[in-house]
Each structure stands twice: as structure tokens, then as C-alpha cells.
Image 1: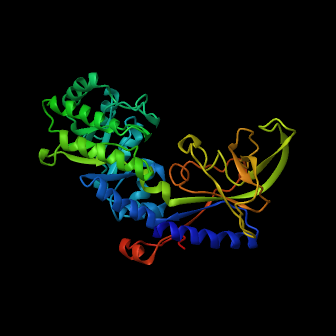
Image 2: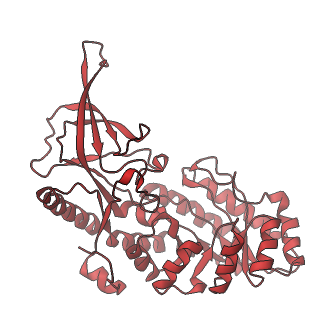
Length: 405
């Protein structure tokens, strides 16, 4: 994989340089080739589905520029100015949040962003006051029991309320274009997409007077893991062919985020402190060594939503010597840098590290960068980006105010 090769080479060059310069600042290496490759894969797996990238997942400008050169963009008002500054036009933006502040609705209207979602009558009343010409998607609640992050407890109208909501929208002279749903993040059941699409079909069949529904938004939840993505996309394609075939006149879009950026970013953490403690061994014979390491980012930074990464497998890259497979592994605790005792990243078995060594976390580009804080005065990670000349030329990106390797 050319993308992975570029990332590895860049990291192995950066860490020795940082070590020689005495830098302890954490950093990401983001691979734009990987983002491009994911887009190509999407075209193969879901050719009928137009992706609107979820900016909240990773709002790095280079990522946005890359994706805006390839596809359409999903955003909310605080991000709206950002994406429009790189040339994304209002017709390529959806305000996909069902509960919006009134000021945000007015701002979207002023910027010409017409597409937005709703799931309740009070939201319809706000839209009537702030953006009466909006093009609306009714978000329905679907089964997300097999997803790691569930959303339907907070968002989405139940099927029993759909008729009355559409009737109310018609009374308010609002234009409803279609229906959306979201099966939740990290969905492990590909059948969830089929069930949701079938439920949307029931909504379309109601044929509410006054609306010509012709848009289906299948939401996000698509995994960055290749096997899961293949399974979910196959189930989605089969369901679309059954309930909304190509000749149905229904346009299909989606809101992927994690899928595009998860595997594109690797985080490098510097070990700036360590402490050996004693603990009872598993075999019960004497005391065993446990080593605690303190690194330069933690739960108030990139690991803020650690539940999204249940299978993190960090690995070590030393600036001065390699890690040998024969080295003993020790029970280890990796702590974040802050003074908060809850800032405990993970417990792992690792070879013994020295102060100045680096811990790398691969596949770490989703919901990490935009959720970071500078709590306790620790610096946010620097972001370095790599891209091959071929992809760079193809995307015709602008480099203003960005670092590229």
C-alpha cells in the first residue's frame, strides 16, 4: 500500500530528528494518499451512493481540501465558514443536525445552505422562522443496538410520528425532499442497514400529499476496517436494489466520516516520564514489576473518546535502538500528561521503555483531532501531512498555511 509506506517512512525520519532536537511535542502524520484511496474504494463498493463527508470527524484543512476535490461535504455552521473558505459551494453542504440553534438556522440561510434535517415539530417551527425555503430531510430513528455508539436515543423520529410530522411540514409550507437515518457508529451488524432502508421505504410508500420524496440519506457508521466495510456495503447495495432500484428516481447519499480518515493518521507520543511499581504477579510467585509511563497526549486530547477505539494496539519506535522481539514484556500503564488521575489511557504489556522513546498509535484519524483540548497547558499534537506527487497533482491542492512532507 503506497499510502502506508509513505507514512512509515516519514515517521521513521521525523522521530530521530525530534529526538536530536529534544522535542517532546506529540504529532500526527496524516496520509492524503490513504484518503484518496478510500474514496476510490467507496466508488467501487457503493457506486450509487454520493458521500457527504462528516467534517466533525476530522476537520484538518488538508483533509477537507482533498475531499472537496473528490466529493461533497457535510458540515454544521461553526465549520461552514471553514469549508466555504476552501471553495465548497452551498449546494454541496448539508446541515445534518436535527436540533439546531435558531441562530445557526439563520446563518445557514444567509450563506445559501438549503439542505438540513429535522425530526420534530418544534424544529419545523424554527426552520419556518429562520429558513422557510430550506430543503428538508426527515430523520427517522432506526435500530442501532448493534452499534458501539448509539444515536437513536437522541435523534430521529419514530415511524409512528412520521405521518403527522410530514403533514405539519406541509401545513407550514416547507419542502421535504426525503428521509435520512443513522445506524450508529461502528455498526457490527450489516443487516442494520437493510432494516433501516426497508423502514425508509415504508415512509416513501405513505405518499404524503404535497411532497415528492426523491432523496435518501443512509447516514454514517461505516467502518474504516476493510472487512466490516465490505460487509456493510454489500448489505446496503442489496437493500437499495430491492427497495430503491436505480430506475426509482431516488437519489442516494451518505454521511461517512471515520471511513475516510481513520486509517490515514498515526499519532506519535513521547514518553517524558516513567515509574516502576510493584504488583502481585499473575502466577502468585513473589512480586512482579509494573511500569507506568507518562506520555504527551491523553484523555483530554486525542484519546478523549477512547470508547471509539476499543482495540488500540500501540507500538514502540525508539530513536536510538530498535525493539527486539526477544525483549521481555512488562505489565504497563500508559498515562496522559495532565494532573487528573482519570487521565489513564490504557493498560498493556510492553517492552521496557526509556524516557525519550516514542509510542505510536496507528489508524487514529477519526474523532481525535477536533476533540483535543489544551487542558493543563499541554500542547496539542502537531500535524504533518504526506502525499505522493501523483496524487498531489491529481487533486491540485493549494498549500497555503499547511505543512506537507
